Length: 250
Image 1 (tube, rainbow, N blue to C red):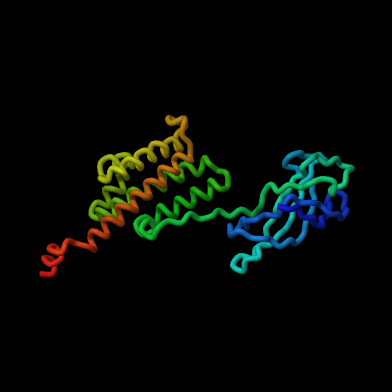
Image 2: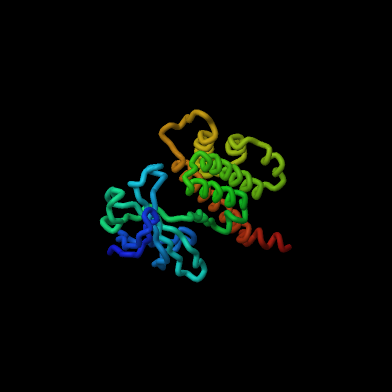
């Protein structure tokens, strides 16, 4: 990918010059689509987050806009110099490397119609947890994924057994999985997801070799098997054996 030269105002000394960027962002941080952004304006400032009170650490901030009509939003790309720039050196004397873009908007995870219909609570909470993880808040995201799992399992069971809804809502998740989930694949994945999910809510971890990525994988596997069970049940109900179908008509 070729470098790009843009005009930038040095807010440290007020001078205008050109800086060389190693690349432009290739994805909009707001709509998450691949783009070729439109340059608007650039500045060079002191990076106080790295060196508070000192003037020898720089950051370039470049304003772009997303060219997609459905987005067309402004965003800021931050760049750091490849080499340290002394206070008396020109900002054009180094290559500036892309480090981040903002504002960051969490990208929604989509689920099948079956999961969305059976457990809308799961879809909502999972995406809230994902947003926390996307914003680097793993200690908030972990308990969120655990809560999403509970909604998934309980709403799936309530869909299967609406008459037991009140009892299912009140039971602990571990008991619901152990005593009410009949499909061995759902039970196997959900129980393990519950173990790791509990670790995310407790002071000490029992599963020290597992982390939030393992929890997410187990939740996703639980989703797959729940979806399979829901689809299987609906197809079995829609396609009764011909003899049963005739008996029901009679």
